[in-house]
Image 1 (cartoon, rainbow, N blue to C red):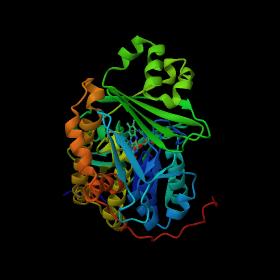
Image 2: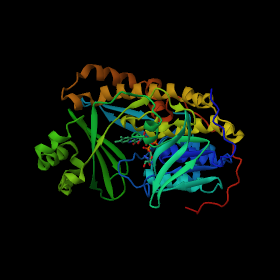
Image 3: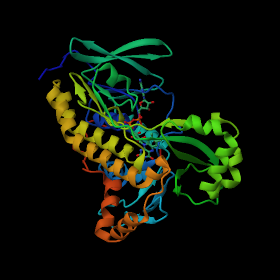
Image 4: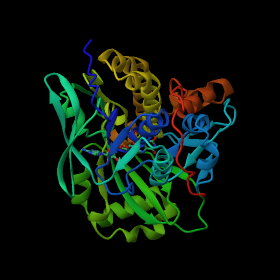
Length: 420
Ligand SMILES: Cc1cc2nc3c(=O)[nH]c(=O)nc-3n(C[C@H](O)[C@H](O)[C@H](O)COP(=O)(O)OP(=O)(O)OC[C@H]3O[C@@H](n4cnc5c(N)ncnc54)[C@H](O)[C@@H]3O)c2cc1C
């Protein structure tokens, strides 16, 4: 065990990246009375590829922080059950209504609204600082110990020292690379083409999954447009492009008849972004003075849309374990190892379940081979039994292990957030 305490350090924690993991950890540590700086490379949170699902476990965490009511006052839609169509054309229903929770639904909130909400709340605490347009470029390392980061903004390059540096900078994490942590990759065999088509006000407010025998797409309601993710076998993007945009539009119209009348809005491949799907994990989430959480520690595939919740749960556990050592001014690798120990099994099991779902629902899309009907009929019959049906619903709603907020509220908020 190596202690990385430095008594003259004013900043207890520097967090690289303000996605769900970094924002939530910043809020919890500032609420516990610590000085925390979050560095975010973008100037805002407005990015198309972000997922929009906030699941019951995250709303429960917000409730423990006294924020659920204000969060649910944000414009959102609620979905209490989901239907997944198997490649053989069977509909399997999942319901959250029987689960023991005050919030038996998924709230669909654009992630930029969610992140604005969390960072506005964090900004009420005097210890919280968020710097946008600040890209972390490296870790400051003295021997084996990480002492902070260097980052770049419009004013040039700067150094910031902190007792603990947290990498919450997502699946292409610069900090985990700089820390030299070993990545174990289990890449899913798929990619997603991501684009927008307009949405009419009278269309249902929801998220929808459309799958044909060998194709699948997901539609996310963003009020005046649909954000559409079209699932393709990994590496097939060039083949699709070579076949031409008219062929792509035709396929799309057949797969999603709801939007067939507006596929012509796609006039250029520049409107279609390729998102490489990745699933991996670090062998060790930490080194002396540095901890990775969220996608930086374990990139989550989009399957079942659970990555945001898993990232938030990492942040809750990191704050539960680390607030006190940080406050005492002595944080050790043993503390950081405790975070990994509490989170690693839930993350690995979640990734394993994602692989199973991927096999069940996307194998046909990825291999163009229509799967046999009988096993899917057995599955549907099994899922017709309420207690069995609750298992996938519980997985999506709560994840594998549901942490609760144990870090205290020691700081006094400086002002009430603006009324919504
Ligand atoms: C196509 C796709 C769809 C998905 N859909 C869903 C969904 O619907 N629901 C769901 O729950 N999950 C979904 N996921 C997974 C989910 O997006 C992630 O698991 C989740 O966002 C992880 O949160 P995070 O905070 O760890 O990382 P991120 O959300 O990736 O946030 C990292 C942040 O760090 C910033 N950053 C990166 N590098 C630097 C740097 N060097 N310096 C400073 N800042 C930096 C980034 O700008 C970003 O704001 C999806 C994933 C994919 C690929």
